[in-house]
Image 1 (cartoon, rainbow, N blue to C red):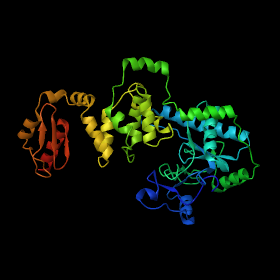
Image 2: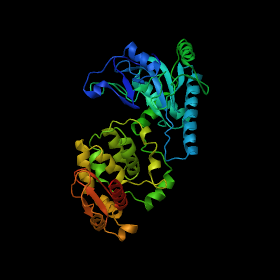
Image 3: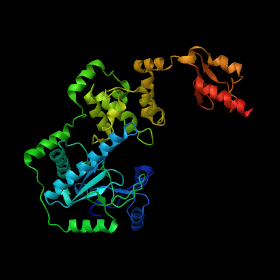
Image 4: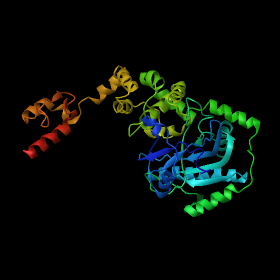
Length: 417
């Protein structure tokens, strides 16, 4: 437990790969029980724990080495991301071992890796700085991977901090064990426990960081760079592709808390646009991170995958999709209104709705009349047709589409008859 939990009076539980706490459902936090822990070890719902022992001290310092693969990348590109993340973890682990730290390297249960440095009772704020220092010292980038704890302390407004997935679980999606590693091998349960016992039996150690380096990392953390890219290459693309002003980002995303869940989350829909926009307005990303409680750049790592030819671009449909799927949130409703009034979005709609191909020849309303399909076969309501854009829609069933989809509907209705 010393290598995976600061305290057990609350915990996180992964269901369908999504972490949550009972407190988020309006209930008080639930304490860990032996039964819950046994389920975790047996491959049931995976658990996550905070490194905090109390508001000021931590049980362990942790690093999360995530590969950040994507379906939009080639297999070779994804393999390189995995290889780089795993090699980074080994480098950090070996560096800490060279200073006699009580440290272990474990699989995350997928292709990622975790490193945990046992430091019971150490000051959270100081160890957090040291965690970023190690990344800077070993990898040349203090913010390349996630460091736990992510907060300098806990208080009344910030009672829990962030969780790190516990050891020995079965990954909810990959179904692999998150056990201790020796070299490239994932050890079994008993072997993992032996490594932990041997590690804890080591003599205590001291933290190796000078006062000057500590102050430097502290300043870097306060003034986080807002991205990682080749500035000389970007300056040319920026002159050619200036990002327009975005009213949604400036008035909603940077001033109101936005929800993040399911497929349409902030990470997949809003972050790529925020990252692109940050090169037009760096202040916007800093405000966004502060408003959404983001303390790490990790979730922004894949931003270039969503750009066009590696160039920053705002994608209105991505933002609109996110807002439409969170219509129950007042900030998202307000965001939709802002987008609808935006000239940039209106231009996008005009371009999108220009008729193409056979849509220039046929009128959808005339086709509907010809095939006697002017009413929805499901609810018998009149279809709404938009000639020119060749669009149809049923207000009652909330279904519609373009000309191709309408032709398929005609065929389906005909086959049923």
